[in-house]
Length: 329
Length: 166
Image 1: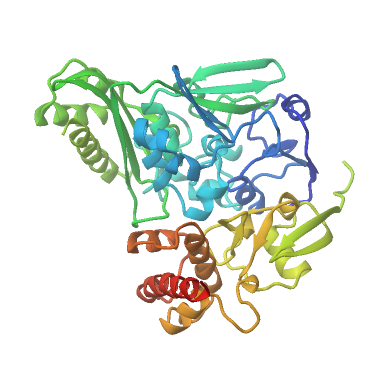
Image 2: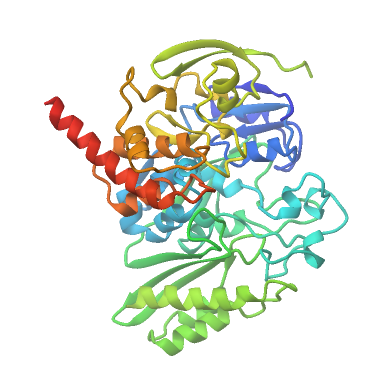
């Protein structure tokens, strides 16, 4: 790790003033430290070398609490994955998020990792993480994964980068219609998580639209009245692995009829992937094995596997079917 | 940019206070091992991928390699060195010996700290909870079956000690 200064501002305003407006994810400048479970691995590999770390864990205004009101749930940015896994309101009303959190990483990491940092974590692509490879996402000319070892990579081709987003909770939050509240030099804004994530472009080599002078303040979930949800994750071992494919499904069902459906896939694209065609097919339908099967096909419509990851299509369809079956049972 | 300064930090480890002067980039793991001479937490992957550096921070098992020492200056840290009382081993340590729960021993201090944190929070865990508590600790010798046995035995030994103490 390169040397850096350590700052502990007292207010969000002071913290934001220490940041600058360059796109988040640039190598130098100031970086925010919360759980540190992703940032420290990036810094140890010299993929990130900030001049200054800004400790935001002790900011009185930044919350590590989960609060419920009639509009839903507000999850402070500093809430850990361990809290999300165990909180009785999350397990009862938003099971997809509790399940996704409990299937992520390890007990030690879940005690440390915050939801804010989890949404901002960088990809685990082995070319990106290798300090000796100058990949496209790090400003290089090409994405080595496209013609290389791409077993773990994207099957929806939406960016020059084919790394997949590594977060399990992000996939669940997309299916749960979460919003992300940001605070920056220009004030506060709140946007749907579907708009918060965006595939990397040449101008912005990151996976979110957060500005360099902003931080996540909270994640908000709408009221879950009538909704059921679940998260399923395929890994190459039983625990402690990033998702090969993750599926989050949320359904509102009334007497066998689907009123509303939301379906999100992880491990298939550089951002959590919303399967809107499948959602449209499910909405208004009488739930049946046939409908579920059609929805699984629709969810993977348009997928373009790379040389070594076509298996993800079958895997994702099977997980979609399994998740929808579980919710309709 | 000025060169990085050393910062004064007081680490509270195993009930003792250790005032030290360190660079912000020093991890808790390096501070424990090099500044405090507590080498029970092992430095193996140093990337949060193995669990050998597991310590208990404010009651929760965490990886010392992914914490900055400056970030721990008002937190209660317990390492493997803090478990035994004199010559009397902690029930989890005793259980690892009796259940033959290690071969090379390199992951053992981390495994023990994870199970110590589990038993602090849940004195009567079932097998799933024991296994889940050590999912973040890799054992390359494959001692997992006996680590599970050690977890069960540790809970029993701790319950016995508690009832004897009453």
